[in-house]
Length: 163
Image (cartoon, rainbow, N blue to C red):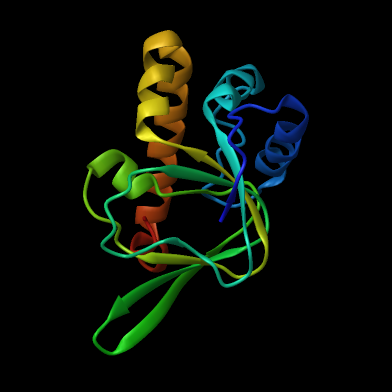
């Protein structure tokens, strides 16, 4: 994983905003968070990249970070004694990691980059800071993520893909 230590790079963030706006999936946040809120949220995000095949989330892991996909595709797998079952493929504009972000439970699935990916990370400490400084923006994001979870839970196949 290649990480950019600068949390906010205004020029770079435009790509994520475009990906979110273009995401037409049922679990898209494009209609739920106003652009002006994304501009504030961007200040709390960390940009990084993954190479194809690289792991982002490990089933059973305790990290609670939330991720937004700008470029690339990620596969979500559940692993049991019989092997791996692919649950979903998430692409540009998708959010992932929402299950542990809210529940504080271990990760329910493993996520790998299916292709090179450009992602943005929101850690719990950064979300807490956002909540203190911009409560209405944090609430907007939390409600949008709640919608993502609700939509994913309505579909049996996506239900288990809440990471």
